[in-house]
Length: 394
Ligand SMILES: Cc1ncc(COP(=O)(O)O)c(C=O)c1O
Image (cartoon, rainbow, N blue to C red; front, side):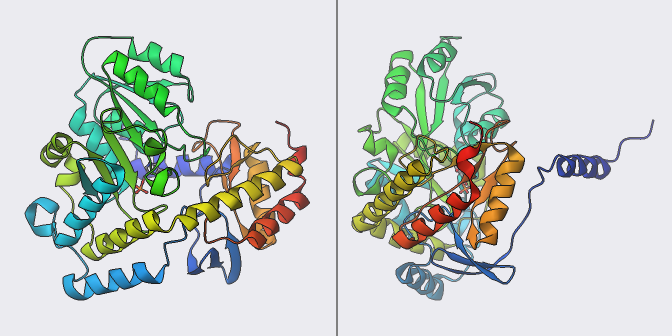
């Protein structure tokens, strides 16, 4: 029997996805200007970026990046442990540790890599990793790649999480959750999870990619907002590519955690350090996210305006008070058509469909930003009203 051809098999899978009308499509953005993007020659008002504080194009960040590039160049030249760790990285790590109230912080090139690195450094083969079913793909993949025994509890269900932790009381256990769920916008029951981990002797890890900058006093995130410290959440991960408007990620915690990750996290060790100029821009973003609380206030005002309007229209809102405000349309084709109809009206809102979300849970993932104005939200509501989504079966 000849071996099956790998690329042919992949092509068949791609064709199947296309037939199911679930294919993912790449869109090239020619230009961005605040919440506006130019795509296929059209200017669209976007409600799908994670630039929640409107920092991605801020002149101060751009100036910080240019200044550091002038002195440090573009690429870091090597991994952190060779000669890629520059003073811009070190300064950013200190600022992140201070902001999150942790002893130390360690930079990773992406959030995906940070989560993989943590899982692989902490967990040994067969050890228990309990996770919320709606956790981001990289937490779930990270546990699997580490060879851990992955148990997923129904979304936000503390009792189920407790049952899964008690499957075995022997050996180490990690419970990992998103702080703010990326496709739903709701917040994990962090205080209950921390109490559970405390009573079960498990370690709690929170991925606060969508909470940092948005929630908590001076934007320190969902964990700070819940009043939890390093003892309650020993492993805190967050990204620099969302509210901070840059790219990259970090893990914050005790000096022992960071020292251990430097020794054992392969996605930290065997990769080029992020460009130092990017670290300088992210450092500037941290200072602005902390001090310019008007950005959070404006964002919250827009969130409330959107939710009020959407409720009046009878739209299928989800229980979220964060910048992620999905409309649950359930049917994938309906979500796609709604997204296309919005685009025809000059709005960019993406449809999120299986397998990114569970079957029959397709949605429009609407995100708001301090870069939006009230008139933008009103325009979105008007366009949504014209789609008659309120009639969607729930
Ligand atoms: C909750 C969550 N964690 C991690 C990531 C990955 O971060 P990055 O984009 O930096 O790889 C994302 C999204 O990108 C996310 O939504």
